Length: 209
Image (tube, rainbow, N blue to C red; front, top):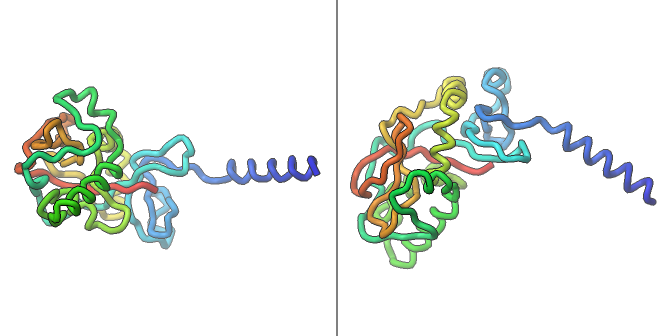
């Protein structure tokens, strides 16, 4: 019996090792598989997003949408006090650690519902990201920092699937500053800025895979 268990465990280990690793810059497809940009044209698959982060499993991570959400720049949302989960003061070094975008967006949705607001009015940028489809959300500022750090690989993949490069001057995150009247943006020169929610910026949704 012990020998059978040992053999089974060995085969399971080999199966895991045999799985192809996912890489930053791979293309996430609608069948939840990934292919390289070089292989995409002949794969017969349909692109869903582009991988910009892979965790230690080498199988899961974050992917960004193929184009910006909405028809242009937009306000983050209503500029009244809106605080969710942990909020951050004016310290870019601290906020770079914020990668809980999915949890923040879920919290924002629940709060809007509890106050009988439409999400589109309450948190326009969050709503625009989630309108991309099930599983999509507005990234936290730390997730945008990771994305920015991998732009060369991302742009190669976006070109391969005829997607849109991140051309906006600045992009909204779902990370709010203390008191909630401003949220953080990343400028695509790498700068981070806390910005009043009534100002305009671009939105690019991401999802977990």
